[in-house]
Length: 434
Ligand code: DLL
Image (cartoon, rainbow, N blue to C red; front, side, top):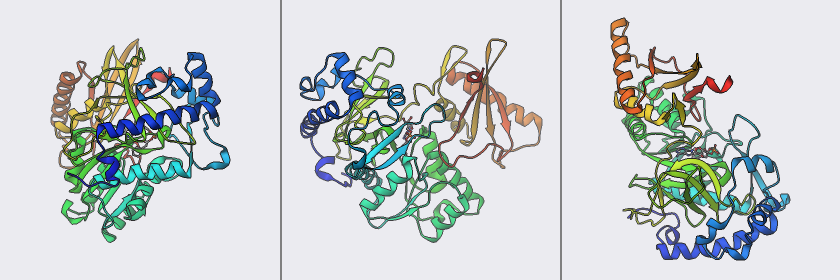
């Protein structure tokens, strides 16, 4: 059995959870229908009235909301409360088009902080801990979310934000940080920087890390766990649903528990919108059950995922989601074959390389080109061309086995690929520019 922040909810039975969800959804649909004209119109178009939603089983009668709806309704069109009742705004890191702007009442922030507090306690945190938050602070939700959760647990909180890695290391060592919160790519970079500064993994006081905001593989987890000497826990969320803490990993580390008293999850076929049975891969859809200011119903995340109700040794009965396999729009189609960056990461780490890589896709003479730059560590580096060519050939063969198509691998010198302090940019797809 594990540690819980809110044991009565976190260990509630399936029947109790369902009861909570059924009560909340009836109220929430009424709240949205009465206060969000944009969604009321969608419901009216579909011929669904609030009275038709009597339990979470009826959620599938409701219309979906997509990122396109959020853009259309920007900035205030999905607001569920008076603006004067909102206390904060966060926004996505989107680089194209209008950003998503999410609103929060104080109540929304309290519930969000609870979700992050559950994640910190599940990762072994308590009042005794020193939590170093190096997710970005500002419009991005990572810093604020873990900071709020850490305060709720009563940890000593270091609101570092991302970047300035030398200072991160100095504070980590001087103030004895025990829990690190950042993106997995930044955690890998911090691990690398600690080693370069001459520290062994056992020299720091860290025991756990809470990493998310981008896809990362099991191989990446092992890499971070050994370079920092910690247990690395996954955390998931998105701006549209508040931020981090929609789901979190417990000590079993076999998927992330969704905070089902606040979020109802479905898996749908991304093409047809049909709800898929448990165990199927599909697009994750969330309904926020008690958010006031930005109460999204049936929001399509575009994250591809699998849900399972298998019993967990930690004692929680919350449904678990697997590591998202990337967004449906992260998937590259190269010469007709579906390729996920995570598959490439798995091959690289299994073959003994670091997670410092970049994928470059382009189109020449109507054919896709597919290149992967892979960085060596100083130990791996050789100035003999034959050695480098051998590594490239071996990696190309391993990639072909995993992906079904062969990239051109380019071995690069140590430190030649830009490190990430936030979400890593793994793919440069120049085809989109043509
Ligand atoms: O990334 C919120 C967050 C902050 C989550 C800190 C965890 C930790 P957005 O910037 O809106 O919000 O991006 C959300 O990031 O739809 C996923 O595609 C991806 N994502 C988030 N967490 C994970 C994760 C934050 N653990 C988008 N694994 C989501 C894989 C993740 N992908």
